Length: 81
Image (cartoon, rainbow, N blue to C red):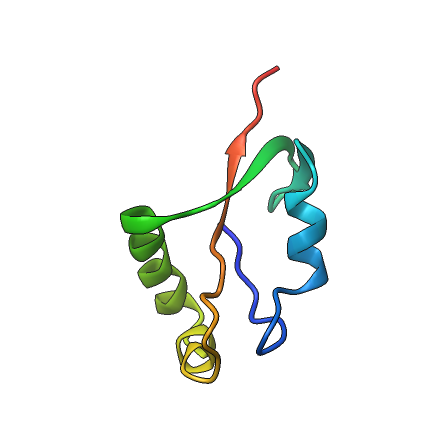
């Protein structure tokens, strides 16, 4: 899961670049690399992930009060071979 504050009225460039890719490769802690498919979490899934995200990184919750846009929560699903 990833999220970024970006600008107050637009999603950041990394979000647009990531969502334009069908799959991409990410590096996990320890140097392991995986192919993933990015997607934006919606509804109940987004609400649950948002709570997990702000528990780790509180500034996202504070920032959300300064913008009318919904900060996207991106899920990186494993890409099948």
